[in-house]
Amino acid sequence: MGTQNIDTFDPESLVEPDVEFPGVGPGFRLNTDTISEESGVYAQVLLGVTERTDISLGGRFTEYESVSRDLGRVTTTADLNEDEFTPFIGIVHAINDDLAIYGSYSTIFQPQNGNLATGARIDPLEGEQLEIGLKARVLNNIHLQAALFQLDDENRAIDDPDTVGAVIGADTATTNGLEVSFVGQPMTGLEIIGGLSHIDTDLETDPTPENNLSVWGRYHLQGSDWQKWRVGLGLRATSSFETVSGGTEISASGYEVVDAMVGYRASKDIDVTLTVNNVLDEEYVSRINSTSRGVFYGDPISAYLNVKVEFN
Image (cartoon, rainbow, N blue to C red):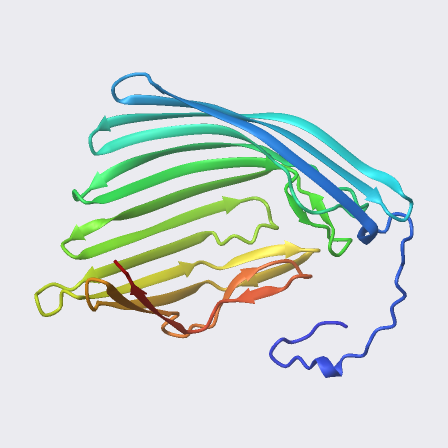
């Protein structure tokens, strides 16, 4: 049906195509039946090496089976039967009562949904992840965590550029990132929570924004005349993001969205909260997918009233 403009799209203008359904011919992907089973056992032990150092050791043993059958030929197109052990090791060292550093290493074995063009179920995602970071308490009442990580994986399911609805496995991809989060009460009555992240990946089909920011603050008003009231304000923001699907680049601009709330404690048993999302009614794309799935716009301005009543 060609390219359509979503702002002026008229479904009545489209001509109904003359399609001959391929039936149950051999190798037809949509005539494939897949049955998958997964089971696993997980164990973890925590060792106190010194008064300030702990080591965590663990792992998971996974059994994965997946059988795909071509209903046209009545034959088996794929029979996956894999046993995998994925270890984990982590270490935490407390430098003092307010600061600790940590590091961890783990391997990845993750079965995936999606079928190849042949009808066979795609092999599991495999890889490894390394993370180092710190946890700190600052200004007495704010807990801060920061981490650097690197993820190497292979065979991640991505859209098949030659077959709509099918997937293929990507080559080995490396993702590096930085994440910072905080939560606490910097002053009487004020509560804050937030985080930011920076992600850099060489997988061009990954639509994750490179930079993300989320901050929320809530303040309980002070004084006898206002102590039943509380107000809140939040910000969600991302940088631009893009993906490649079937050789076509899809991109969207970054956005900033403001949320707000006001609450009132009417009595010991009754609490009322009014939340307004996207206060400025920003029009933005919140997520992009492949050319076959399109993009998703974020919600426009919306309000929610919550009344909580406790019965004793």
